[in-house]
Length: 424
Image 1 (cartoon, rainbow, N blue to C red):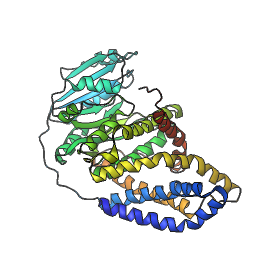
Image 2: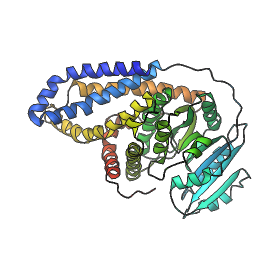
Image 3: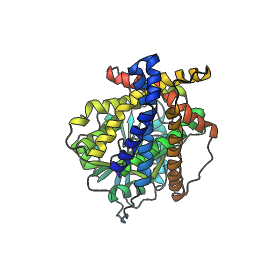
Image 4: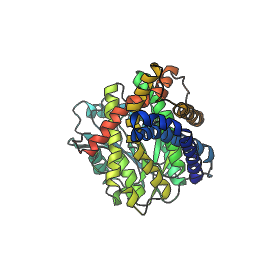
C-alpha cells in the first residue's frame, strides 16, 4: 500500500505540474525562473502531493491484524518534572486510575524544580511503587537516562508531567507493542489537547493535534515507521533503550531517539486508542518557543542520523524521513508568497494564485474529514465525549495556522543550522 499511495500521489504531482506550466511561465516573466518554480513547487505541488499520499494511505491501509490477548506485564513509567506544582497531581492520579492488571512502577525525576512540586507530591500519599528521584537542573534527557538505569521491567513508558492518561491508556499501548512485529521497539501514544478551551491559540492546537498530528501518526504507524515516539507518552523496550544508551542530550531528544532506533533497522508504531491529554501552550509566545524547539529537533535528527547513508533503515521509514526535508522550503514559501498572493488578489491582479493553489485547500479539507472520522471512532470506542469545537478556530486552522507557525519553525531550523545555544 505504501508504494501504491506514493504512485498515486506522484501521478497527481506530474499532472499538477503540467497544469501549472502556464502559471510558471507567467510568474517567470515577473520573478525569474528560479522563484517561479520554487513558489509553484512548495506552495501548491508538494503540499498537494503530501495530501494525496496521506488520503490514499488512510483509505488503503485498512488491514486489521487480529489482536491477541496478552498478559499485562509489569511496566515502569518515567515522569521528568520541572516546576510542575500545578499539574503533577492530576498526572499521578490518572496513573493510579489505570485499568491494568500488571504492576505499574513510577519514577518521578525532579529536575531541580524551584517551586512547590516536591511538596505537592508529598501530599499524595505515594505508595512503594512510586519513587521520586532528585537531581540538579540538567535537562529532560538527563532525567530520563538517570531513571532508565534503575528500570528492570521489560517495557518503559515516558509520560510528561502535564499529560493525563485515559484509564485504558497503559493497557492499550502495551497491547499495541505486544501485537506488533518483533522488530517494533517503540510505540507512540495518542495525544489530544487537555486545555483546548483556554484561548484561540489552544483551540487552534486542538485541531492541530486531532487532525494534523493524529493523521500523520496514523499513516506512519500503518507503515511501522512512526517518526516521533514523543516523550509526552510513548512505550519502549527497555533492553534496546539501554543498549543505545538512552536519550541524547539535545533539544529534540525524542525525535533523535526515534530516528536512531529506525536507523538500526528497528520499527516504531502508533497506538491510536492509547490516549493521553496534554497541556499545550496558551499564548502565542509559548507556542512560538515550542514550535521553534520542534523544528530545531528535526534538524538535529538529520544531523545525528545519516538517513541516506544508513543501510538498516527500511525504505518506508527512509522515504518518510526524506519528506521532512521539504518542511523548511514549504514554510519559507508560505511565509513569503502567500501574503504577496493575497495582496495581489486584493489589488485585482491574482498572478500568484492559480487553480492549483486553490485546489490544495479542498484536498487538505478532505484529509481532515477522513482523519476526523477515524478520530471519532476512537473516541466512541473509549467512551469519550465528542465535544463541539469552534468553527471559527477551524477556519483559522485551515487558512492561517501554517502561516502563523512558519516564522517560528524557520527560526528553529536556522538556530540548529547555526548551532546557537540550546535550552530545555
